[in-house]
Image (tube, rainbow, N blue to C red):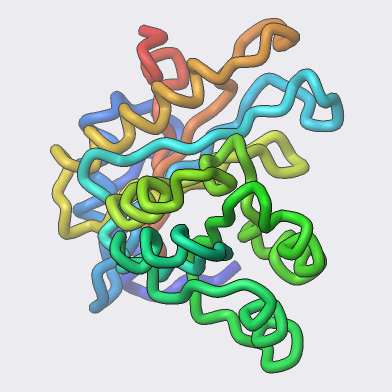
Length: 233
């Protein structure tokens, strides 16, 4: 794959054979920014589990102390008093059958997080083929199926992110923007990785965190020493 001059220049700052300490890696990530926009910093963690087995799934959600730097638009499926609670908490969209129809017939997708009360999941289930592949289906483990919609909306807007394994046993998550600086990025990184380590399945054997890489949206990957993340050092 051919890269541009800016990418190649920033890539020269990174030693691809080295496993960096967290602080150094995030400082490098900030320095390797090449785009004119405020790039997102992402973490990619490969775990020593097999996602094909139900007892080795790793999934959850955590509120990043410094948020993600992104304005989060929340859709809530609710009725009755829960509608007012969701709206008061700042949800952009609240509805029931009307929202299902809007999504199905109009292709409406102007939201980043979907929250639902438990009694609405039968209705929301109709959207499984639309929301599921996009990672937007409400889930109790992520705290997005809950009777307390106000809290779910508040946490989503404060920087709550969901982490889950993909088919290759890797977790991909944003931890903020380059403009945060290395210090705030590390606080978010430590919070995320701490949650991932806590979520280690009892069925997991051997080394849990196999590899860890951070990168900006347009920048090169920077390898972190997997033995020094999530309180494992």
